[in-house]
Structure formats: C-alpha cells, structure tokens
Image 1 (cartoon, rainbow, N blue to C red):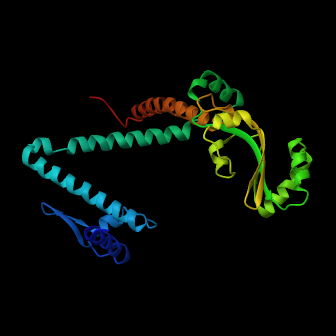
Image 2 (image 1 turned 120 degrees about the vertical axis):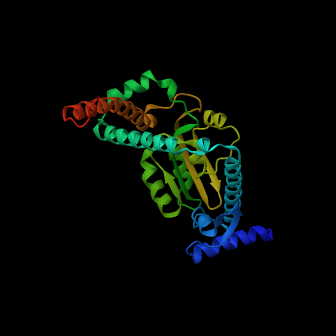
Image 3 (image 1 turned 90 degrees about the vertical axis):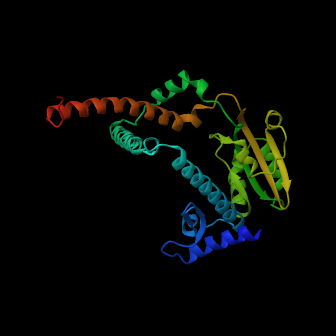
Length: 277
C-alpha cells in the first residue's frame, strides 16, 4: 500500500473512531475542504482495509473533479446560467407531487387477485417470462458413506421407493444436508452450490441424468431430478406469480393516479379551496 493511500485510510479510521466537529482536512480545492468525517459516512463498518482505501480514493477523486468543474462554471457561465433555483424548485415540486400521488394510489389500489386473473395475464404475456437460468424439480439427500445398509437404501431410492425418504431425511439431518420439496422449481445454479455436480454443459447434463449417486469425502449424495426447464424458454407460472402481482399492482396504481388527481381537483373546486380568475 502506498504511503498516500495509507495516509487516507488512517484519516478515515481516525474519523470513525474519534469524530471531531469538522474532522481533518483530506483535500482542498479553491478554498473548499473535504474532511475525513465526510468519507467516514460512505465507508461501511465491515469494509476491509483494501476496500476502505479504494472507496476513499474514489470519493476524493470524484470530489476534486466536481470542484474543478464548479470553479470552471464560475469562470465561464453567466450569473443567469449559474442560477438553478427555478429548476431546483420545479424538481422539488415534481418529486413531491409524484410521491404523494403514488402513495395515495398504493393505498387505494386493490392488490388482491383471483387465480384466473393471474393465469390470464400469464397466458397473454408469456413472452415476457423468459428464464435466465436453468431450473429443476429435485430431491437430494447427503448421507454418511458409512451409513448402515447404504447400498440397499440406494437400490430402493433408484427404484423410486418413497418409503425410504424418511430414513434418508433422518440421516441427512443428523450428518449432512437435504432438499425434498419436489413440487417447487429451483435454480440449478443454487443446487450446484449444495451438491458436487461438475459439468460444463448444464443442458446436456440435465438431459442425460435423472437419478444420481455421488461420493465426496465422508458423504454420499442420492439425487433425483423430476423435471427441468432450460434457460431462454418460458418460465413456469408458479415461479412468476409474485412478478405478475407486481405488474398488475403497477397497472392498477397507474390507473388510480389518474382517478385520484381528478377526484382531488373536483373536491378542491367544490370546497372553494382553489379558483381560477
């Protein structure tokens, strides 16, 4: 680490541990000062030394660049060009009206949906729901390699004898890991974090493997893949229900915004709270 970066980092540590009214000056540009307390606000408490140094340097560089541009603005822009008070006020008005309308709309909008409504939207907009990853329906059990009757258990598992699932689950709870929700879709990538499948072609693997036995260290994995869908195909309805609800919520909210604005305008006129001259 360079002495300059070490210097910056130490200033940040000092600011975090012993804050002062303004702090120590880290940079100066045309009389404007940047303090270590300013940097302390943007560095997470759990940041590593390397991350802290990187964030500090980036922040200082950006701050200095802005100061240079602001100074140049004072040199080449007219007083009228520099005056942004009207734009700032308009932005404040736009932001507040947007926030209040959306809050009122969320409060007024009905966010309950029947299964038929959700299914209808899914059917009409299936092209909007494309899988970005491969998904599967799967169960697996991670059990000790020295488990009693392990070969018999495997034979029954391969024969799709569900009566042994309870035994496998008990062995997995005590010594390993398991997943037995065969009715829900999960991302294949997430499963690969749990079981030692090594493949460079997920699609080929899924097409050619359904019941799998793997060994790793002191454990073995019994795996059964019930179904799968390949990336870039249509995502199943069950995985998209919450997304569809959010989409429909947004549409209802947008409709409510128009209704609320019209209603509030009418009420204000009726109550003589506003008038046109």
